[in-house]
Image 1 (cartoon, rainbow, N blue to C red):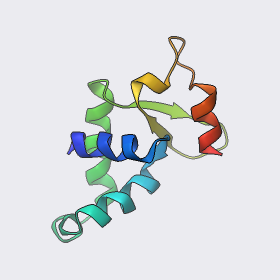
Image 2: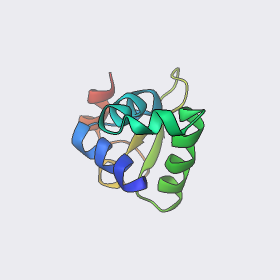
Image 3: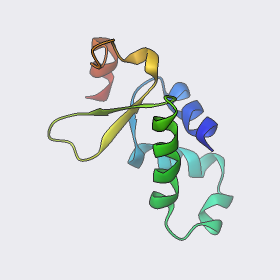
Length: 90
């Protein structure tokens, strides 16, 4: 599942929040909806695993609830999101 989440962020070509990831995932795998009571909690567990292993990097934007999930190559050494990726969030 972690690989699927990384694939969705890569295919989107921009940082995504979990509210954007869930519809993309359910479009590709509608059977997940039937298996899970709380899709948000289910996805959250895999997003945390992806962050723990460095596959996705969380980025917090002030004034926006939650994180945006980014690929490691989109984040600078200082932990800042690259300007071209930051523009894609707005």
